[in-house]
Image (cartoon, rainbow over all chains, first blue to last red; front, side, top):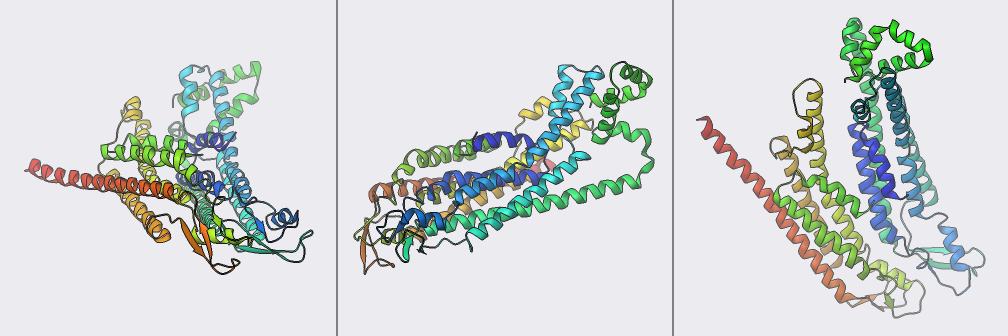
Amino acid sequence: MNWAGLYTVLSGVNRHSTAIGRIWLSVIFIFRIMVLVVAAESVWGDEKSAFTCNTQQPGCNSVCYDHFFPISHIRLWALQLILVTTPALLVAMHVAYQQHQEKKLLVLTGHADAKHMEEVKKHKMRIAGSLWWTYMCSVVFRLLFEAVFMYIFYMLYPGYQMMRLVKCEAYPCPNTVDCFISRPTEKTIFTVFMLVTSSICIVLNMAELVYLVVRACARRSQHHSNPSSGKSSFYGHKHSSEYKQNEINQLLTEQDGSLKDMLRRNSGLQEKGDRCSAC
Amino acid sequence: MDWGTLQAVLGGVNKHSTSIGKIWLTVLFIFRIMILVVAAERVWGDEQDDFVCNTLQPGCRNVCYDHFFPISHIRLWALQLIFVSTPALLVAMHVAYTKHEKKRRFRNGEKIDIEELKNVKFHIRGPLWWTYTSSIFFRIVFEAVFMYVFYYMYDGFQMPRLVKCNAWPCPNTVDCFVSRPTEKTTFTIFMLAVSGICMMLNLAELCYLVIKVCMKQPRQTTALK
């Protein structure tokens, strides 16, 4: 499991995201993960071996390095990227659950042929109903993780700038010892770069939050202004996930024989099911 | 996520590019990214370990290396290649959006062959022309900016054998020797030449697109007459 594996997993989520979500995913993979792998890791590669202290006291080098770099930037960024990309898996799980329910419905209504099953897998879920809440939670968690990690960075390495020289007096160093960091300018450049892309991602996430809220409000006001749409809107509204969920729940809560009775009783419902599976 | 994944992502864009665009992409992957990965990274691999200064003063070597090489050539080239290949994603996003719109029309009842939709090649006209032209423009701008940054930082593209350093804590002025200077100069000039070729290809593509649009305009006006 490496970054490529994560890319494969998250590309699947891409299909059900908003346009802003897709841009966010591209920025994460190209400007953060890729830069981390191809460039930043080689800059920090020799951070300990080239950390030199002006002393011959054994152990002083290690102790001073550990004192000034409790956790390396590279590891912090890797953790940040993993935690920030993981909430998207909530959405993937929810979509998989909904697809599973749809497939069950198809089986129950007798449309379990390969063509309909493939269609269920391929069609794009609209971000409405419970999926909207899941998506919102995932965006909120992303924002939270980004902010937390930026704060941790600021606490551990105040100012984002890498010093050339640090003065160390931890035991066993005799008195105060000058220690020199390797490639401080290059490290500062990459730290600032990663910081800027992190901020861009935070802005994209906030924009996505606002977009989702505005869209939901617009949809709700549209629904309120057309309350008497009646049956025609049900048949026309082929991708209403709330409608489908209600239907699925109704069908699945009544098991065994009562299910067939119910289906026979509600032939209208079956008709609706037919229409829905044909979409 | 590495160069291979970037190649997979950009390979998709290739389908909707002009012939010059396809040549540009090939030059980018074979003569720049591949050379960077298989050759240049090894040449610069020991750049700090083998940067030797004529002093026993601890820390002097680190400081002098940092002073003369604020950002390594390898990292600059990696960033340049990432920035230069990213505008092509604008085109990919536009194409994806157009396909999405066609699918939506298909779902709403219009008769469009779904198989054809998957394999269709979009002609570069209308809003796609503008997106494509913008992406080429950005490519040219990024190439030029990075070439300037290189020139500004390393004063002329040649790697010196010896640099004289007097940053603290080095006592007085100290001679420091760069590892593999000739090999580094060779690769720098090679990457510069290929970068120049890519810029030429981008300019040619831009001219080709503009001329194509201009040729179409008079033909349309004569057809109307």
